[in-house]
Image (cartoon, rainbow, N blue to C red):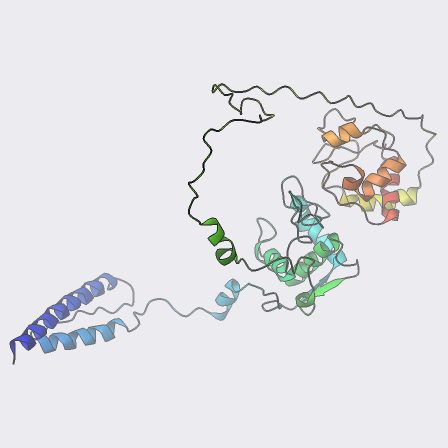
Length: 382
């Protein structure tokens, strides 16, 4: 045998010896697990035996260690909740708008409002149409979300808050149908099911594009700096309107001149109201049912308290923003006037359109007969 071959075998034998020791060390570490086999290989005494021992140890190491078990189908199903835009993953079921209104009121309205308009800082689910190009867009299910399957998947997986996955598939279909209705995307007789969800196209389905900035824009930004023809001096040419932010030439902070005071708003004169008409009891009873949509923010009655919105007891005929124990928006304070039938009708139909800047996030009552019924009900709780 040549010296080079002997050297090669000796080197291989040394490597094999180290591998066998490593395998034995690993086996000792896993031997304590229940059901794990305890493998300790004998140290070989020759190069060929060492190589054979390494091969045997490698094959044995690849064998199952007897840990764990295959997941049961129901265990896999509990985690396999995702739903694709084409409807893959949807369970059988259906739900209509009116069922969804009741389920939504019970499980979702406390955070998202009875009309999906949001309560306090909880997310708004409705509205925002046409605002995506604005400086401060309102991104809701109706204005922003591209796929209805995402709405179903999120409600099913994560809602209601604090009690996730407690809703049945039919409840989820009904809630999603009501959210669509709250965004004026379907009529009140709409029913959603696993057969129709995939075919429903959201308004912003085409509003998402592939992010190709890495190839189209990044190279334009990553250029070597010019470093030529730089300005010799830098001078302040304008001052900020906020105090103490723009330094003077000598380093001292500049003081902006106070902004002129806005002219005082004079409330328009109001003619004396005529004697109120008799209450239509049937219409007021209908209004009491419609007013349930308002209860997430407003209360009426003897023991009513301010919530997100003020108490509305006696509001008909009262001055706008007249409750001293409630902080109104600046827009409502400056609007002034009296809550008569005309102003209430305009405000309830389109709060943000009627009074720009109002904090009221409610989208408005769609049906004129509902507005008349609510006004009559508010008249009855003077």
